[in-house]
Image (cartoon, rainbow, N blue to C red; front, side, top):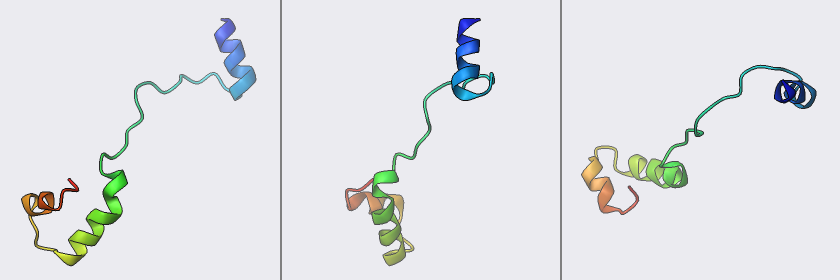
Length: 55
């Protein structure tokens, strides 16, 4: 019960907290590079993009 009271005091609600790991893209760091390569080589396959060592 103490945890619920503390959560109400600090967060202003007693809704269940989200569980699990936050989701993120594994390509987030290389997104700009990937977009530039796709713009330059629109018909490139995944294998061809892997040749550029970014994927």
